[in-house]
Length: 278
Ligand SMILES: Nc1ncnc2c1ncn2[C@@H]1O[C@H](COP(=O)(O)OP(=O)(O)OP(=O)(O)O)[C@@H](O)[C@H]1O
Image 1 (cartoon, protein in one colour):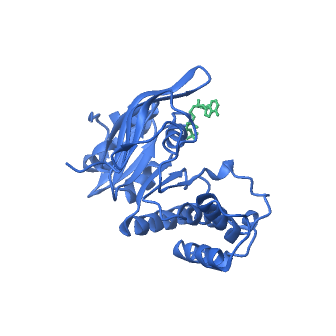
Image 2 (tube, rainbow, N blue to C red):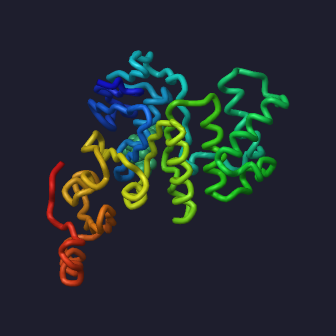
Image 3 (cartoon, rainbow, N blue to C red):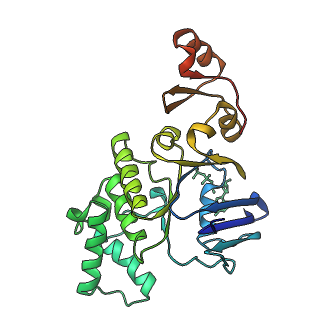
């Protein structure tokens, strides 16, 4: 059986005396492109930070390529794109410098740029489609461009896995779709990707694998199998309606009244209102 690239075993994390999740087990396989979905505060960022060694787990283990990592250490060749809300955009640096900072961190170089640094940063910005804004201050870029700059920074050191924390949260639909297409391209080139998001419809459309999370792993699988009203209610604690059309699905929030309204107006083949457990 294939060995997972990254494995989380019985992981328990929390802050102060409050646990966020207990005994989580999750395996990421080489070449996987997965979405981590769950309500706000359910522990998605905490899980990513634990994988990255940014917080110390209370218990459990993280394994990378079959080797156990020391608690609180960063796995080799894992890139990270933080939530844009956590970044100080007034920091006076250009897009290119943001990417080069990733190089300094990895190579422990002194913070001045060589021509090689600049060329490498340009190549990465080019790879994510924003080489033209290399010299612009990061604070003056659009949310979508900022996101790509941070993606370029995460690609420094040629990671095998990139974790993205809500990369689609601050951008409009078109920008979200473009980013997800870019991630699919990077995935085709061999990158393993886990991204957290609240946007269930983007996950359903663009991602082949979904992990539902709410203070623990609820279920995982292909969106068509996993996004059932029952699983969504278990994950989000709210009723949702799932529409099916051929191999596509559309998820809308709404309780019984919306479902009854839809049932009156839509053919039953489009509507999945009955619970199907994973
Ligand atoms: N540094 C911290 N100190 C104390 N509590 C924290 C800290 N960071 C997060 N928490 C708490 O841990 C819980 C999980 O937070 P986390 O950010 O992991 O959730 P999330 O699923 O990523 O949420 P969102 O989708 O809103 O980003 C929340 O109750 C949050 O308030």
